[in-house]
Image 1 (cartoon, rainbow, N blue to C red):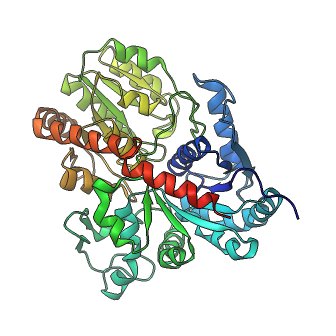
Image 2 (tube, helix red, strand yellow; image 1 turned 135 degrees about the vertical axis):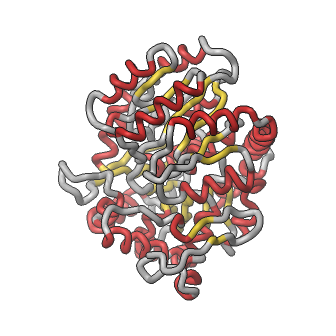
Amino acid sequence: MAAAPPHPRVLMLPFPAQGHVMPLMELSHRLAEHGVEVYFVNTEFNHARIVRAMEGGDRQTGAIPAGIHMVSFPDGMGPDADRSNIGKVAEGLAAAMLGRLEELIRSKEIRWMVVDVPMVWALELAAKVAVRVALFLPFSAAAFALRLHAPKMIEDGIVDEDGNVKRNKRIQLSPKMPAVDAGELPWSGVGKTTEARRLMFQNVIKTRTAIAQADSIICNTFEEIESDALAFIQKTALAVGPLEAPQATPAAGHFWPDDPSCLAWLDTQAPSSVVYVAFGSLAVLDATQLHELADGLALSGRPFLWVVRANHAGAGWLDALRRRAGGAGMVMGWAPQQRVLAHPSVACFVTHCGWNSVMEGARHGARFLCWPSFGDQFCNRSYVCDVWRTGVGVCADGRGVVTKEEVRDKLERLLGDEGIGARATSLKKAARASVTDGGPSHRNLLRFVDLLRER
């Protein structure tokens, strides 16, 4: 009989989108520090993007920590397929990857899988290849709790069996959890077609089954802010967040290279003066909205650092916005966000409210101007604005456009409210205390490492 591997071996399986790959890579860093050997699975398409990003960034090329092995498999899509269509991406993953995952697990004697919630189809391998499963939540525990509540919403006639809203109602599962309108539930707007949205909602309905099959649940959150939501899950969920990549090692989960030039520019700005604007990897603003935002930032009279991906409004827009900004701000394609938020010149964070951005902002004491567009972002806005009260939200006009005056006025309100600043500082202290040695998230990480070491 072959000897057992000297270190526990874990397979990491994220959904192939930036907001899912990044936190699982950050968790992989944490596990590798404790002697766990990680096999990190990306699609071939995303693996190529990650390699290019590392080569083009400001950190050492290829310096992935010992113990993390990058593996890539096909995603079942053609070379020119639209991978921004989340529903379409999800459709073919199981057929393309299940056989290859089984082969990897058997050949490397892997005993644990950490499976991203949208990849629950991989749980069918658990019994077949005798692996244990940890379910990873890439969103808040509150968003996960809403998934668990979906069958009751169907029963109550709030949504139909495809997730479509039948009766508008504001849903709040406990006073310390966010309130969300039925039309803004975490699965809303995910998928570009009716069929894609139906398939995504079927994944939501499978959540209870996935919990029953999982040996453990891992969350990128911390107990102080989500104790009620964690209790609602009805199975021990280990909160290990906020997850963050070590500064000394490359963030190998990024799809675009970091541009460090913004850090030198931030060094020239006054403390707590800069408005940082970034809408993540998927949100896209049209030309009208980009103009209004640019004018609103100018009206605010504050320096700004604005991350605008090239796919926001077509080729040439990045240069056009740079010219429009003039000397008032800096416009760039991708920024080292955690390092930006940590910079003392940053005053606030204009964000789409993706959960990774919310956790990063919380860890660095950010005031948030919330601008959600789909999915769990509305739930996260409710946390920020209504529960923690560390930010304010923008409101669109009758055309669905957030005007320049709205941008200016909300920035003034956000930065003029000392209560928001005090609460953001308090949240920062709680977030950092959770991950320090002896903190609740650190203790939960060690509990998970002990589970992985069990034979």
